Length: 242
Image 1 (cartoon, rainbow, N blue to C red):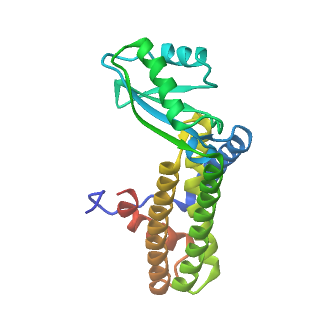
Image 2 (image 1 turned 60 degrees about the vertical axis):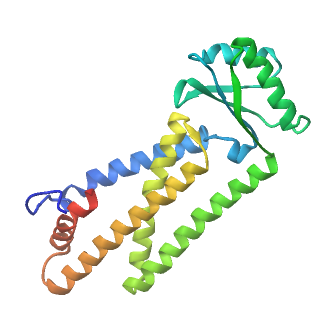
Image 3 (image 1 turned 180 degrees about the vertical axis):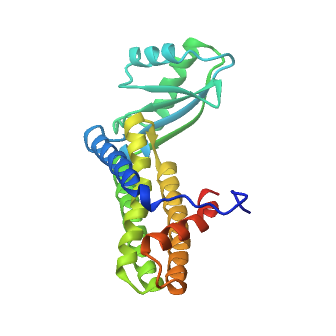
């Protein structure tokens, strides 16, 4: 399937400095935000309580948050999900309180707002488990990049392309992490899985482009490198966008 109806001839190499600058700025902003603001880690990494509650009518998130604070819950995070009648509640870890006690206290608060309200799900993640998940996620990203480096080195018989592939692949997850840092959207294990998927798609496109570049260099040895690179990128542009 082709995205463009005809062969493109965009001068990518002629404008590469513009894209280098834009990419560098975005990466610097992303890294600066990550190291200064951090990520809004969910209980998957920090530990704590995650509960889902359902109301018969639209839930007032602000009222629920105020009632929970008044009932002694520390720093409750409340937001709608799915519909206006469903809410998600996140609480910091408290090793002195059991899951049964937390559920009972939540039900008292929620039924005080609406008698038909009920807690439909409650999960408790200990701080130790959250810390282990954080380390596991970091190792997963590290070994992914290491295997990519080895794969490219074996496939193209040079470490230079491996280094280029790693730099290209790292670009995308850094921007994704920077986006989550800037927006402070919840960062959980699902996001880690999504980042690994982004790495996979980026690697697939990188291999396709590198393959075409190698083919073009073998058949056009006298052509300037800029011309060969432009031709290769344009010939794979539809696949890249799709």
